[in-house]
Length: 431
Ligand SMILES: *Cc1c(COP(=O)(O)O)cnc(C)c1O
Image (cartoon, rainbow, N blue to C red; front, top):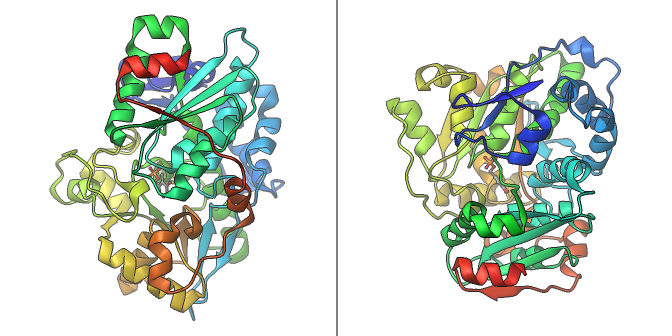
């Protein structure tokens, strides 16, 4: 399979698309065409790695990694991704729990897969590959966890000092010697500017082999499409119906993977994007005009995106807003509604949801009767609530039990360095 940029550059191999992350013309990589599947193609696939093996095999044709695909998938899916039935009388609604990985958020899947691929492609080189990652919370932890202790790979995590929660800071700083955690004296935008600046700096990039692991890498989207395939297939085998999905959405990577699975013929019904107060996608569907803007801060902070990068892929794959809005729904959920939804989830389901997941449960409750009754629904849970305990606990009036994965991270020693938001300070600590 060859890969092209959304802006036309290419073709490149999968291996180069994984290494490069972003295309030379600034576009995002997409496969030249999507394979098509029938449900029966998955008759012998029971587990997620087996479903993923069937689904992803065409994407790996011609890759140096083709022979390693099964091993890569075993490594990626070392934790369960169950769909748990919700107690909603008379309706078939479940919660797809994407939060059982090492940092209890769905980004563990994409980061784990990318690390498994890149360490096989690049891990034996003499000069280690340095993965730069700017983070406002979840991404940095997932990437650090995925690359922790991998030979030949180094991760540099940059996060804004004082602007992530204590637990988030800890999971960004509790890794081995090949992970350097940097508290930047600035905002998230400064962290991102440092990563871009370092990668564009000829002297620095001659000295270090830089790569990035942000959510636009195709290596994050491919494995994400497999849990939608798996959940859709399971539901279809059980009921004979295609479930709809409601997906908490920020940069549109997770939802894009679901749409990609549907385009490939997997049993997936309506797809609805639940965003927070950042209305760029909702306004686009309403006005047909794409107007990216600065992001607003909300309780669902990992979705605070005003310029969702993966829209460029979606427009290329499916079409412009007039076509897109026929195939997708979008609902923007404000902070007060998120709070109300966390309370209601706890009262109705007996467990707490994280602020991101609460955008999906809120959206489900808002569906028109036709949609709600006409389909079974799978609501996507993107992180464990214990990661956002400072928001969730006051709302439910109880403490959230810490899952064993998070407990293991919190009991590791943390270490980090502090830097000024300048390229010179970054260059010094890179050595
Ligand atoms: C990143 C993230 C999201 C948003 O996912 P996108 O792929 O950026 O749309 C939602 N919830 C959580 C917990 C996240 O970390």
